[in-house]
Length: 308
Image: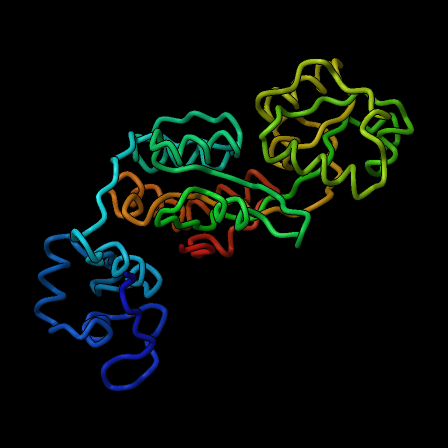
């Protein structure tokens, strides 16, 4: 049974997206003293800004769901995963893990691998960017296909995906068809990586047979490895994000903006490591670092994009 989410305060007014103590008390139908006691005991999501307690409505809604009593045995018990962040590697996310002091271990084996580990209870959070050709969206379908649980996906940001090419683009590549026509050596990511699935979709959309591409035998296990293969002259082209191209001083041909989301259970969201990570993600220093890396749009960071 799901907790009831009130759209309005007790006075009948629409609850703002960022509530003050009095407003969240009305939203929850609780006394202000009770809410303050929850704040004091650090049992309710909030932040202190210029001496004032503020409560994001989206987090309060998640908090209500997390604390819901379920029919037939109280709150739903779950295995507590290790403090491990899995899935797709991302330079900005890796920076946030270090900067936040959240103490997550990183095990980046690709988006599909991350979701599988998350479903088995082997990890706390998975970073994913999985394209679905059925409607051109990212991640929602992949999360919906997970085993039944209280899954939440929260936006970290959007990233520019495109072709990485040698400096000066000596083969004159302007798109996926040119890659096949020029007989360029292509370095792919491993199966299950978000970039690999996006590449396959782009090839299919371009109407080119996979057999026309001259691909390296061994896939690149990270985007950094992919960039290094091109920079060292082992390959001519590969699909990766703009920030990786910049870091390796490679040419970059943008093809699509993708969404990068962090997936976890609602209960896991309220653990201290995750809260530390998201405090960093929502900070101005995170936005500045994203701009410095290049190829990111973090204007929608913190948005709940899936809440099962």
